[in-house]
Length: 173
Image (cartoon, rainbow, N blue to C red; front, side, top):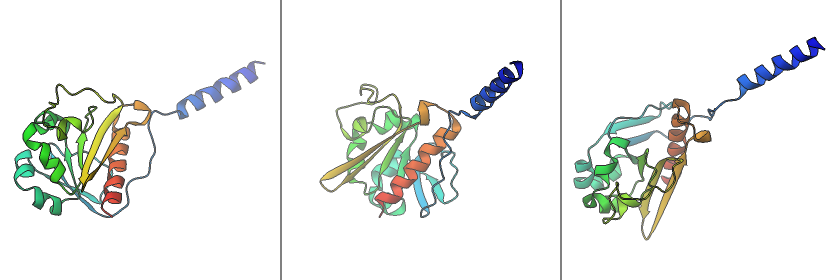
């Protein structure tokens, strides 16, 4: 009886050790991507994605050039409040590439509506890690990305970026 109990105990320990709060998703292997980043470049797994720092002022004054030079724009958490200023609302609508708002649980609304500030915008989904927006002619597209099992860790964050890269590749076709 003791051997049977010990056997089940060992099996339970092994199975518990195998459970994970992380995803083991494949990395993005599509075309090479160039992404403009307002803020600090993200840490990603992919070698075929290159980042270049840009400012919100450059985004505002060189919208057409940025649309042709990059496949997407990332606005990082520390710049979300400024990026939601009314003077930038039209920029996101003019860009012909998607814009992704990283670590924003407020969706894209405070960025594309002039009368909504980031601070006053309602939280849309607390499980959202990033939101994307693209105004394409008379329609718009939006995306929300959550963390695997709502667990904030490096592996799950890198997985979100991989899914964003896949979206960028799909939109660019």
